Image (cartoon, rainbow, N blue to C red; front, side, top):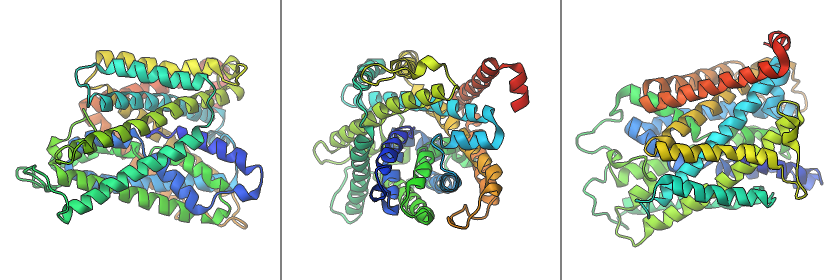
Length: 468
């Protein structure tokens, strides 16, 4: 939402939950959860956003992904513990409400929805940038309108099978990265060659892991954390495991494999070309493959990126629409947003959610060179702010749980939860020291302020005072 997009996973979760009600035979095995998690977390935030993070951190981005993987594992563990101990259909919104009252449930739900809209907008921007690879002279906003109309039309027709779609395209995304890693291994063994003069991770003039110092490394963390955005809903899915005590195994395998795939693929990107050649104007994977003489290999990979990113974006539109319906039914949004038509499509919520696409089109017109960075930073900050709420809820709710039947609990409680909050704080604060990221930071700050103002206006001065 990625994902980056992490919102499409809610769709898969909803689909899976409905199936599980039919019988125990449909419950997830630990390796199924690991595979679903890996496929659903990888999104355009990684395929394109890594261009921003490499530009900022250089080769030290590999260490940043180790930190991001550790933080994601802690969040997964906290949410998984709450999910298996206290299954709640509203997931983290419900846990925040139980821990700190209605105001935090309201805040968590709306942050999740707005982050999803921004992620969806960043996906549509990424799609447009990918397509510009072949049509560099056509403005971003033209492609943004085209992809937006297609996604809106699919959702308006009442297509509800995004869980299956995500599974298919999840396999495509994983396969693309594994194929890239295999290609890199063959390159090292001399099977493929490049005419490029620089084929080393550290090349002359930049022989350091931290070319922009610790500050550049710090600035990159927000984009790295964004790449792990979908971890929240995979934690929620852990409640559907056939054996609840397999949760740590599923989470460990998923995050170790995901972090390894991320780091190996980036290592080969910076082996094929100097990291200084990477820009945010196209995927670093396409840039890296373009130096080889294999016909159309860069275009083929670009087609895969567009296909995967579009599935994530269309699914994200459906998912944020579903979240808005949930908020409306719980009384945290206007009731009319829960209305559906004859095809069971919540048209009012769909139109409201699609407004985010309209915003991205306008932004693409006025800010074609920086819109993706603004959207990704704001979405990333809001996304991991929800991680903070998850961890804080875990700290508060943990003492009320019993671990007699289900032994799984987050290790080293409460120190790991506090460590996760510290790491997230480091990622968010790092965005303050980069000009474009700072804009995204203030956008997210304004959004949180507006959400709190909305709660105050909706539930009254007296209730708001009583709940905070």
